[in-house]
Image (cartoon, rainbow, N blue to C red):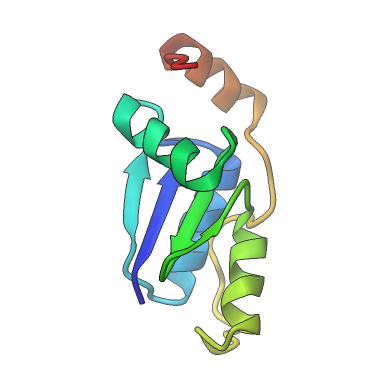
Length: 111
């Protein structure tokens, strides 16, 4: 399975996606959309929208998705088996006020 995850370096939603990948021991490409303009542009071009996270699994783009939704997709398509393992993070939560403040000082708007 080839997985490309277009994520922010620090974000509740992005961390939820990472947690699902770790929970199911899935190899994936963690693509930084904040610090690399080309990565953000690629995500927008592929997903047709500017919101993140976006996860591409074997050519299927899941746009503006939470870790919980990614896990549901993987399970419902028999790409992973159910697991009682802890994800180690909340799978369906936005950024905290602290994370927003941190990103506001570093985020570069491209569009």
